[in-house]
Image 1 (cartoon, rainbow, N blue to C red):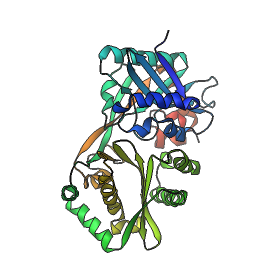
Image 2: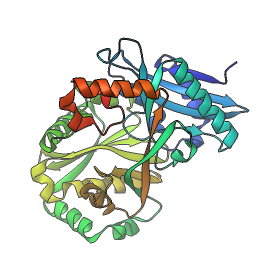
Image 3: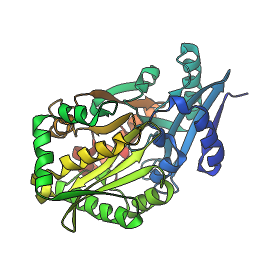
Image 4: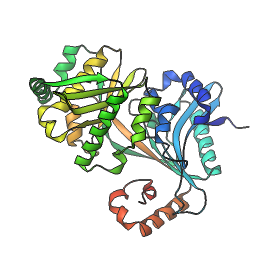
Length: 356
């Protein structure tokens, strides 16, 4: 008799019921919800799952997207998994070493028995849950810092904690008549979507940062109580925006964009300033502003975000390996067949996914 169950989106009621039982341990709750994971089911080859291990009234919980590996690389049905964009990883109601060893062992057995050869875990820096992933088949990798705003201070104290350049940018935006409005409508989501796509093209961003039209529609339809949207206007023209994901105690700045020619007005700074002011009134404990584009402590985006808070947390990923021989074979096949992708994607753990 096994001590674990596997849930998918066909059994959301059970999934959400278990999630409610461990609510006090979750943190950024939204990243563990089936409604959020469903955003990343790109086709019938992707399936969101929750691995739930239970013993003596203690729970171990891990959510991820299981993906069928492309048949251009292997004729048999093999899979890998990945926790979705954002922050997730394991949740455990106890730090008992024996319990965690057994839970991870059961997960490893499940993967081996179901042809899952590898997986990527994005841990939650606010939970520091990489500390409960000390397993031989998981290689931890530091990916940089994220910036966290604690909202247990007064409005004046938070303002005084800004860097002088950040305060000046906020003042400049106000002086230039930039106005921030809070929306939660499909029209606002579509406005942000077009702004986001435009901004990513301007930056020549990696394809991982491009989401489908359906992605934004699903956020509105399925996460209606768990997202918020802030748009920046110059007169009647949308020049910036930020999409927020909301959990019980924490919020995360999920996506943001600013028109390139309006950056000089301090739009990005005023957006974050107004988001902080808004959630000061909502009894939110922390805002996760995310990190930079690199691991570098002097990464320009990270430095910009640190203008709002000096508090940072370390962000880790976990590279899980269950079939090292097959993984290496897939990578070699990918290297040989898709040479044009090597320069752009070779640093990724699940690099063989990029075949177009």
